[in-house]
Image (cartoon, rainbow, N blue to C red; front, top):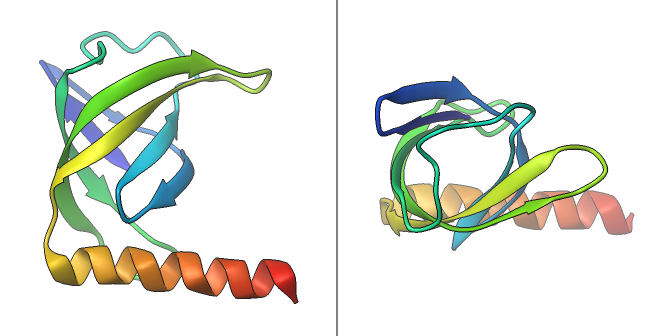
Length: 97
């Protein structure tokens, strides 16, 4: 995932994704992504073409693996939201098999 915020561009790994937003791992200090910051995203689901969305940072946190923050989608095409939904459903089927 590419994430663009105030004067910064970075490539980050998603920790989770849903039709409402995405959790992003941040392996280093990432300036410009304070809570309530607006961000632009380029999302690439495995095996699919990238698409863009806009979001807002809603929370920050830390785990043993890396710091992370949650982004709520504020603008995303319905077709792209459907692609995320299908991806999540597919992952859930694989996980329960």
